[in-house]
Image (spheres, rainbow, N blue to C red):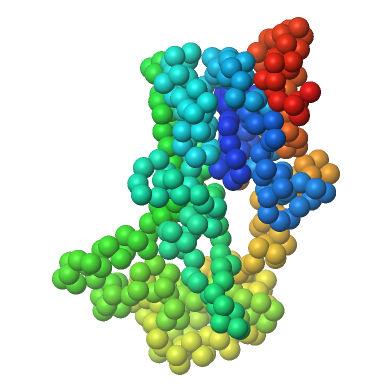
Length: 414
């Protein structure tokens, strides 16, 4: 059964942001929330920040600010501050996605916002959070990942250190955790009439996303009589996290005839299925393995046999083999090749560049038997000034003109 009303329809969010932390409201907008991005008259310089630049505008802006409205306010003027408070009166959420206290310095502290709307849910998204010795340090997205131990320094052929390629974590996870918590705050505010204030450091989120490794190291600080490795490894400890996979054999990446696949037959049943499927039960009989979590660590003889077996077929053939013989074998894609993967094509219909400025991925959660709203093109600076003031706040033409004349919207809005 299809629903014409998006899941977050009726939720109004006022956002004050710079750069990547604005992704916190991208998730809300994708689910149907009305997000009003309040910008300085100069605008969020995210539009010029980092590659690729598509016809003069960054992909970062086109994706992160899609589906939002832009209103320019010069919060140095009292008139603009009053407009902001008017927006807050009928909103449920205010996002400060920049250094903590930025709004407070303009007379828009959480306490002030609560005076006009006791139910308001306020969330700050910053680099290192609102407390601690790093709270005032300037930063960019990679900093959260290096801080969290997610990036290994690399060296070029001349011995210069450089930032190795990695999946950005903090700049994505921080907004995601923030959006989840904001919705929790909204649910409680609707029930109790009381809003709340919260904050998330993108560095904290990066560390939390890698909890398994950091918690493993913490566990290994305890004596071996209390914390051991797997039974299949005779309880010997491996290095924490994925580092402990290096010596794996039955759980390892292998070359196929045209690429790579991930082999994951660490359970004895899966391992037997594989050996039967390739006609090598002799390999199973020689190295049957343990019932669970047996990677055949360090067995180079077995690894050599498997290397030759996997080179005999293409990646696509091995994926089909895994399905047919109930053996976990997965594709090994790159960010460049992922879009050609048949599972990706099935799950991720691209938002086309013709309608959004860039080809973009949709929100990944699917609501069965209904379609989420397609977000609008990311706004230009102040694109929705007139509409927000007239349609959202109900200001008449005379009042809007007076506010323009007073400089509340900034010179770029004239």
